Length: 339
Image (tube, rainbow, N blue to C red; front, top):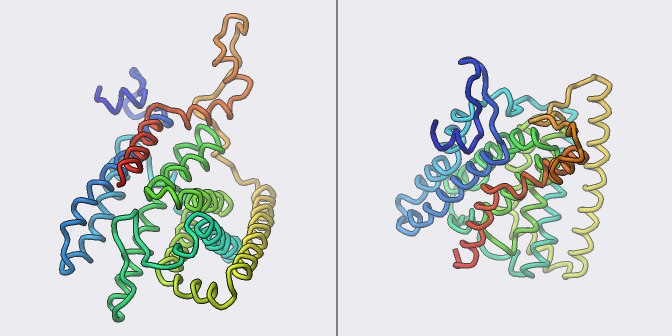
């Protein structure tokens, strides 16, 4: 039995063709940690790039950082693509996607202004504090920016953080399926000042995933959000300069509250529709199932707590699992050491 199998908690003695259970709260952070390590290693590669080979390298590095560990993880855990919610979206999903996009943009602007002030509206857009976009240039440069800084990051990040991690953590609890991918998504960028905005964006994307029952919806919202981040800064800066700080913050705050209300209303409508159609909610099924101890008097405190509050216990075990703590320590070390 290899190291991964031991950490996963795979059981012996099962049928050869039967899928073996594993401890998702331990294995899922290993994928995140692999992405973190590869991302920081790419920092050394990026520092040695020249303008001639930079474009291709940014695309290649993103594929290696995200896609390779994701595919490797799916193979090791014997997960299939059918569990990743790769389903088409319909016209009825467009309104919630639009409200999610506006909520993400306005929330990010407000939180970035709070943490970074006016400077957060200036400068170029960067990926993970490593790859910096250069908006100037012709049509071909614009196409490259869309591909490398908007489309590819949304594809890679949604594959790891929503498609895989949400699918893994939802077997522990629905709260863990939203909190943990959003937490790791915010940590991925290794920017403490932008952590609140990134975490909230992750939560909105996770909620969009579950409200639409499709990974395509958060992927599309993420892509459009990245486009706004890459090309929209001059526009937001102009609005700020024309209206002044108070008017800009008031307008953005009003848009955030309105879009948030519309998002919640549309999510409620979609869930009523799913209930009428009697669609299943697989994320409500916890693995392993929790049962009350036969002898509560002799049971441990943790077992009694787990039996009385199974979803809270499952969420806490996900947040404070040893492998999740390793991700937190790695993140803190990078931040403290100045990237």
